[in-house]
Image 1 (cartoon, rainbow, N blue to C red):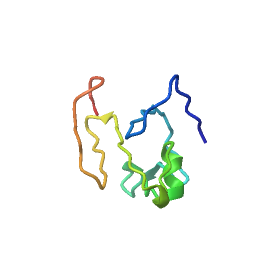
Image 2 (image 1 turned 180 degrees about the vertical axis):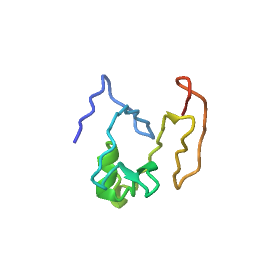
Image 3 (image 1 turned 90 degrees about the horizontal axis):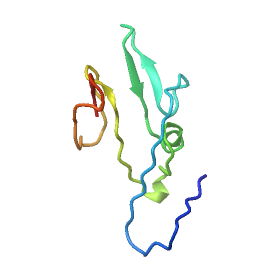
Length: 100
């Protein structure tokens, strides 16, 4: 659980909160985990079921909350990030040989 404190009152309406989070790929088949194929290839995978989504990043991904989220992935240029949502952008960087 987290509490966000603000300097002044926020007027009613739609607001955006940006949270920067760094996590680790685990090997527990829950949250955001590393899967390997029989050909020794590796993939970062998630099923994002409600209880496992918050293992991947801080969130309230519960059907009752109707949560939405945007994800940014920084990967080696030779790798592809696949999702069940539309790709908003794919830009070079932030470092040589990477794309965001």
